[in-house]
Amino acid sequence: MQGSTSNQGMFWSQARELFEQIVSWLDSDSICGLEHSQIESKLLEN
Image 1 (tube, rainbow, N blue to C red):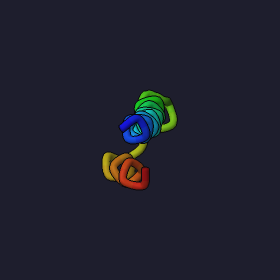
Image 2 (image 1 turned 60 degrees about the horizontal axis):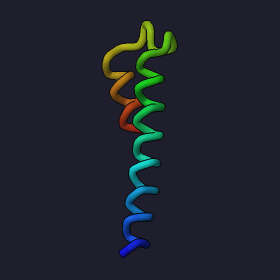
Image 3 (image 1 turned 180 degrees about the vertical axis):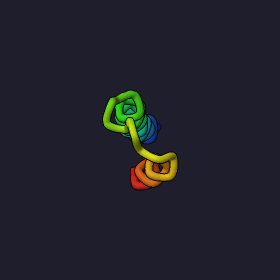
């Protein structure tokens, strides 16, 4: 049972890291001037 919990923790930490990267990107100046569709495409890539 412990191995399962450890795997879940690793999954969630990776998911959280990706989420934080996306939030950081959305909050940055690098998306200024991008069309909505361009932002959506980039999000789908991730």
